[in-house]
Image 1 (tube, rainbow, N blue to C red):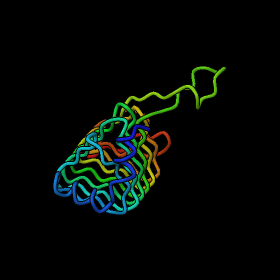
Image 2 (spheres, rainbow, N blue to C red):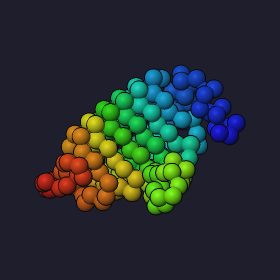
Image 3 (tube, one colour):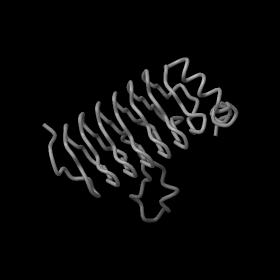
Image 4 (tube, rainbow, N blue to C red):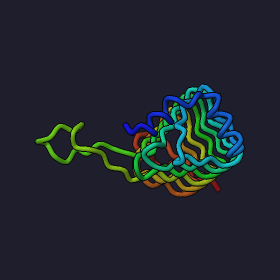
Length: 175
């Protein structure tokens, strides 16, 4: 780990991160959240990041649009391609977004030694992601979509859908 990256992660106190993100973006980052202090993180006005959330943006960009809320206990990891979250998005408690994956194409090399891939994650405006949901690398969720609690999204989801399950499938369209 590079020295600057380590200093940003471990030496910037939580209350100072809360203050800096509040002044810079007019966003609220709970002092109990574990949010990387990095130029890769951009928050819109009115964003709320709740307690016990871990937001890792040291490897790639994370952009969260205005008035979006990340609930308590969420885990967000940017990967190299990053995560884009639109405006007015609600992410309920204990959800996860992971924008990278282990390589596993060679059977003669252990998976943990093959490196990573990253496709990124795109989430449109006015999306509601239910509690305990998982959004995996390469997923795209279009505007106005509801992801029900406990669902796993790993592909493209069209606009104004209500999706559920593992893998998430559309069960209804919002009109």
